Image 1: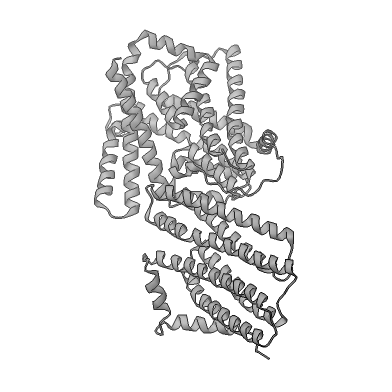
Image 2 (image 1 turned 180 degrees about the vertical axis):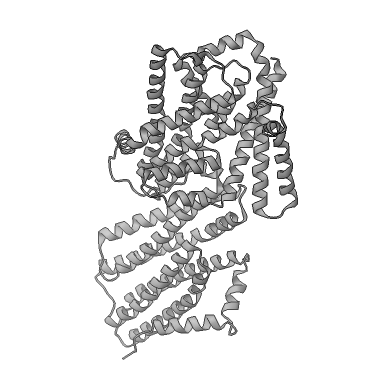
Length: 585
């Protein structure tokens, strides 16, 4: 084997890994985010979780991606730890499908059907079909299908290149001698774990082992411990992904590690103990790609059958490893590895932005409640909540900018744009909550308060503000255009209520019924209410405009406020009737 064969091997490995990446990316885009939504809806039934985990991993061709996805869901609170365990076990079984596809390269026979089953013969057709779909179709769906075909073809070409490059090794005695060290189970497990940890894909490392098996130098005694080690090595991806995450997310990654370590220790011990007594004749026999796929599948099925009934015990073991020292605070965190699967990353950003919106709404309403009765403990909670909203904007903004540079589908690109436009408004709503809190604190410290008339009038505008905030948050979380269209008429009503309240206060001031000091407080409160409703309007208009694929916000607002827009006028009148100010006596 000369230097050029080494180059060919490295090139084949690069094509193999790149093809796997393209294939997984295309499958993920084609799913349109449905895979992760399906996982989110999982019940606590461990068997259903196992089946779903196996199915999803078989589709996206990556147990690492499934496990990272699950760690992210546990971290965000969408999924409980016990739900994740079944999916993680299923992912280990689902990933074996890749080895079976790669084993097709070892098919022997001269008949037409047998020849057509060989990847080297049908992969060019996949590549040709894929490039046709990518170059001559405008449909995103067909582009994704084309990407899947191209990815599969590149993966298979890479596999063939690796097999061809290592073929001369069969005639090198030193190589055969080197491989004998892997007959030692410990060395075999370590080699498999290290290789998989480096390339972070058990499917790829199994593919490399299958390519090496084409030399005729790999025996069962070498392959079995290496395959077991590969399952341990694939845990590295999930362990990295849980850095900075909450305790339960870390526990999910630890469960994945324990599952593979325990499975390896048990079945390695069982196999070599039986072999010591029964002297299996096949141990020294040479394996091919198909036999490696069989070993990979049997090991994962045996490990699952052993540990699936002990899912609760695995959960307890993970909890003992990572103990609760104190109650976990809400962590604002999105896994960077989700960026490799943009549909999942976009969905996670949407979930987090929805939480941010809801927190902004609750923070404002909590601050307004202090106007009635000031509470120092509640004031501290509002301060902390506003700081959390700032964290949301910082984390989301940074993450969304990174995500926007990825290869997004049209729908994901729209969603990223919508989130980027809106999170700033929710952050500003949080700032206004602090302003309202300061007004309430000033009233409390100076022992001053509004007159009964002012209190009654304030409750009207607060009620309208409550509705416009709730409507905006629900419209944002559900991306509901029809609901978003109801925000602007109510925002106009709030502006009108604010103007009237200011006029009424001036009248009370002239009549000596109110003080100038309270006038400043009222003016600040009304200004903050107007600003909050303005931000609600910004969010609602963004939802509408992005769905209409237009960003002419000024023209849109002018158009809906025109006399020709009967729907806007009708809604405006309805809100005026719903929020009437008490009559002046």
